[in-house]
Amino acid sequence: MQISEVRIKLMNDPHERLLAFCSITFDVSFVIRDLKIIQGAKGAFVAMPSRKLMDRCPKCHTKNHLRASFCNQCGVRLDENRADKDDAGRARLYADIAHPINSDCRELIQEEVLKAYEEERVSAQQDGYVCRYDDFGEEDYARLGPYEEDYDDTPQVQTARSESASIRKNGQVFRIDAAEEKSEAQRPHHSAADQPAADKVASNKNQAGSQGDSFGSGIV
Picture 1 (tube, rainbow, N blue to C red):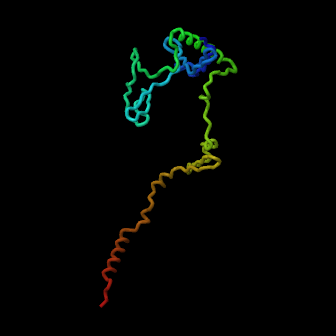
Picture 2 (spheres, rainbow, N blue to C red):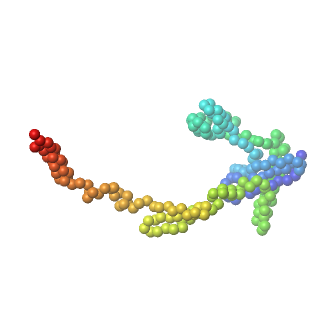
Picture 3 (cartoon, rainbow, N blue to C red):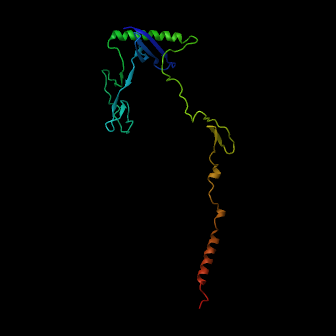
């Protein structure tokens, strides 16, 4: 078995341990993707593609990652230390999807991948460099929906007094009014001048009472 091709995708963050992604092709027939080149304490090494290990919630039976503190479905609290431990006492949180089963194959993969990584770093410094790693457009920006293409969130109109603004969306202009001024917002619906005076109300009551007492007088 021979490694016929290695493709590298360099990472641009010098502060991260992840140096690159890569894919390898065996005998021009079989491809394994998403291998990682990671900077370790003793130098760079190749990590096989892996997946997160999960278990099921005992209440709703939904799958959750072993590090999850709560169920993603029902919200019940889960034990954070429920994952199995390896010989070094580290939690087993990931499982390799594809991996070599002997040391000779592992050394062959690591040697070829790290060699291609160094060559890719040199090529990346040249003009017109194009990465050959196929990421299926995962680094591209998504297209906007039909109602978002004409959206412009830049304020078009703004005045100092009202601080109102407008935005343009789908060819129409929508006005956004600021909140009322503090003096106007705190002003009561009715002022004291609109309320009847206390003595006027009292006189009206007395007048109504006097009319009630004289009702029917003079009738024989």
